[in-house]
Image (cartoon, rainbow, N blue to C red; front, side):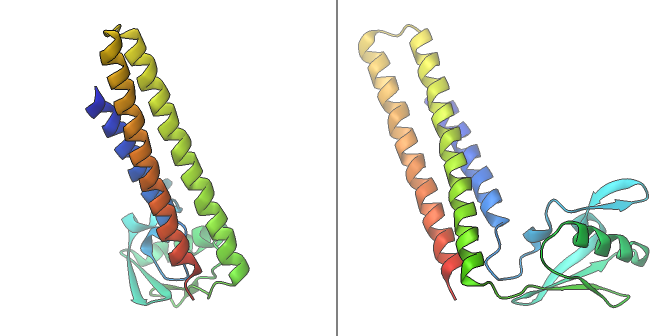
Length: 177
């Protein structure tokens, strides 16, 4: 039972890491384009499915579509995504230059990261609550029930520390000039 709970908590941490990756830190990262869909022959498709995305410089992304006819659609989708980055289309590739972050913008990103981490902690608490309810329903002997509840509590404390560590790392990354 504890291994099931730990698996759910690991999935929560994986989801947290994925969400934190989407917060940019002034450096180009192809993950910034995750979630941007391009209309391609009537089918919404991810940019990474339609093009190679490379990082030629620390603050630049280059999108080279497999089919040049989709170039305008990719450009339009990026504009509609409101990323705060203007795409430059040279007829062959789209270049995104990531601007330097202002201190105010960095602080906004830190707030966003804190919010994401708090959501992860809430998810962990919900997992703990469900596990505690299952343990109480299982009608273990009293001493075994206490041991199981204690194990679940130890797990949540361990995973809360992981969340705090991820937040601390992201905060340092964002506030670095």
